[in-house]
Length: 252
Image (cartoon, rainbow, N blue to C red):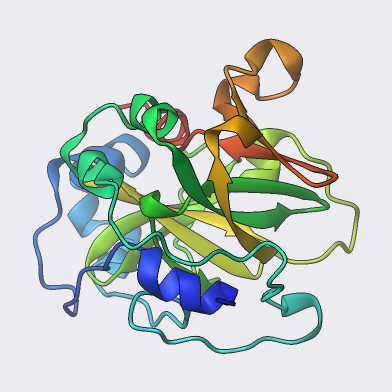
């Protein structure tokens, strides 16, 4: 049976290569102008972002997987892992082109999802919108940004806002709690964001019958960021809306 890293190798979108010499996209520049200001290139933040950070990939399409231990452990429990379906649904391409991703998810017969821990709660996102999973990287702080933006970094030449999901979703984190050790990099249109999470949980191949959509009226805090609920065994896992996450983060 396929393990988590085997499935991830097959299913994720290929990240861009290169050392950071590419031009920033219009959405990337708009983000920097919003939170750093006009002329951001000449600010300390702008100069820091001109150089890509060194990122350690945990899971990605080249098959590179480095096992972690203890509180950093990445689960490879086959109970939730999924074998690849063998054909690409095309949702990743729709995400890059800006098409309606949420409608596309609902239309799929089955979805591949990756679940993860935010503090002591478990959430999931569609794997076809995930570029890669990294260990947490250094971030350039943005003084004018809202509290849920932990900062921004340069990943292979792409400006990448880092989102503190616990802060954004209003999830309490006890003093001295476990750190956010991983970064799930998601891409939509011409920008990518990194979701800070405590640990990766597992992978699911979920038929539509196991997913309930349009759940806003059934949950409370941050309901606008929730796309659906996955029912698997005795677990109930909230599926985050990646497109609404981007809207919340960027507001551009």
